[in-house]
Image 1 (cartoon, rainbow, N blue to C red):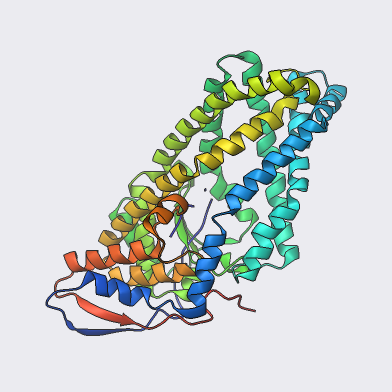
Image 2: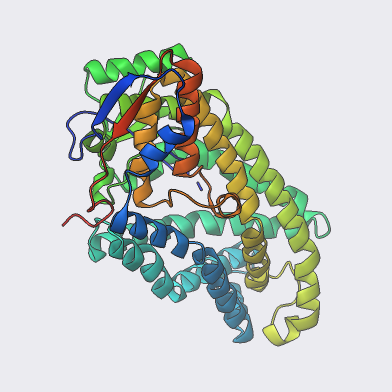
Length: 438
């Protein structure tokens, strides 16, 4: 149930590796107790499994801070050692065209940054994930995917930086306005083309076979006028055991994608609950709203960069070998500012995404009318997301509603919409929950 910072993730159904929790229904309740019903679900995650889930997620609170600090230190080193100036000089020897010099500088900067941050990337994205049982790839397989990501980042990142430096040269005082437009164009193109050209680089996508499940998904999509010409299943299990689904793309590239983990770990009712949530993102126009929000955020960020970066260059540029902001060697200065501003904006971006997810949850409950299945899926997501955070903790660090918030919403919906709602007593989640499956 996610977006998800951003790509493409999916949903399927059928046989279960981990069957849905057994739910024994009691007699109809004269007064359905939302608090008790919520607690019965939350208490299915106990002991080492719950401690592991909490430890994983709480440890992640520090990752953005350390990642930003490492990025800033590397950018500072590239400036202090005059390496970015050297990258620019190498570009000048290849061509005297400003765009070519910017391209060479950007390419070398991105490549150097990726190499220097590789130890941190290995720890944060492979070792840590593997230690919590959330990574199924071997190190070689993971490294191969990182190479694909690097190639994509070099191409797209270089193009963005070349365009930004062209804007700085052409409009030195108001470049951030055109820069915002550049960011918006790249964001739109990414949404349009990622499902077709990027996602298949990491996973195999196949049209979902004809059958009752596909028919049910198509019928659900048709109820809300969601294009359902293409419904894909992809092999997310090669990377991890996380369950997910999405409606991705825009215009002619819209497709529904379902991952095999959802098929293997979920009941038909749970799949319907997830599908209702994902259709909600499309029906509620979250993709377009998010583009608008992030474009405004990019405008604010570039505006601040346009004020701070020239001041830093005026003060330290001579020792760095950087002439002014239009000099491509200034790219680490720009990135230091962007890294810090992005970190400061994290609670705001988390809140926007969390609001979207909460709206999609409400839509999905109305669409699927499966509150217990929805609660069950929320608990299954706890292998990588803390189930019961504090209010401030959830507001600052969660980009999705917590499991407790989602289960309570489902139980409140059940009380409000299900006549003679029955209390269920779900079975405990297995203690190996969240451990790596060898």
